Picture 1 (tube, rainbow, N blue to C red):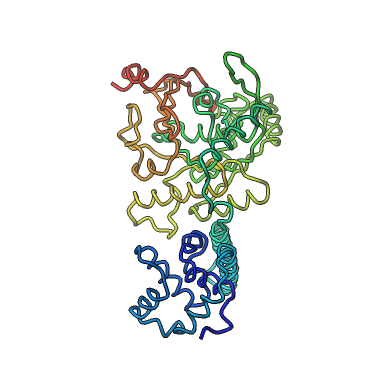
Picture 2: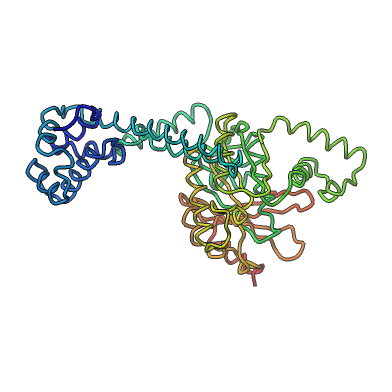
Length: 459
């Protein structure tokens, strides 16, 4: 006979599955076998689901037969246990009891996490950063287990009407979807970056990917006004300053600051880096630096960082001050979780991309990451196949923007949106102001027209 100490909610779930087999389909999306604390009830749950999945009728007879075949009939308590489960089940509330079982399971896992974290504090090889990364990572995993808001299906009309409601609300407030970058020719094409997306900026070394990424971060964190067209009528809208974090694995904080000041003051970046500026230029630099106090941009310059470290930093920023966009420069410098670079690079990069995409969805922000193009992109129109370790990057990225500079010291450049899940792939003419670390807009080309025009540069 089943013992009294069996958890009441767990017994109610399994009993409902035995007494009213269609309830199996109702509880399985809510609860899993490992959510049961009692091993015998866990075993019964698995067997019942197996019978249902095999297309066989679920009955006391089929259940007993399967349990005996598995050698677990006596272990679960025999006929007394099955009879009691069936007789005490309240099938009408099966989903309610299943949610209780799920909640209890999450609470147990929280306790387990706290115990493991406490044990790790006694390990002399554990640094504070490693310990905090572990706690942040485990808590995020546990939050993801709470699917109460997403475990139901939606009718297509509910989803589409919800979108239309959002569009109507945006029209009333003159707001917009997506996070615009401040580079208007880019924003006009794709409306900016969308929340929950992974966006790659790709280029050969020294071709401006870090400049573009920093320019985007500054624009997003500063806020600005921009023009919109509605049936030929133009009106002014605005985007407020959005909290942004720039993770630099390549450049120092001072190098980033110098680039920002060069762009803001139009003072040659080489003069700023060498400290060879006049008194009037120093005054302009200080004025620009003070003006940046209103920007919601934070810089993080770790000597090295794994995705776990970046994820932990982003979560903390999101909790403490809010986070609307994360920029990482650049992908190939992110450490693997094991801290080893001996694994196959393609798989290592793929896993980093997958984790960054998960982070974008978890925090509901766009993640922008810089990436190297391989040598095949020298003096040619960039393509997706030229992404270093391209297959996995292409798979996980929602957008890929390629930066292509012309030969020599030419200021001519093009931004190509060579992957976009939700739109066309145009090319955008820009100029690159190397001295002031800035891209400036020209005009937008359609990709099909661009190919012929681009030939003179790539021949």
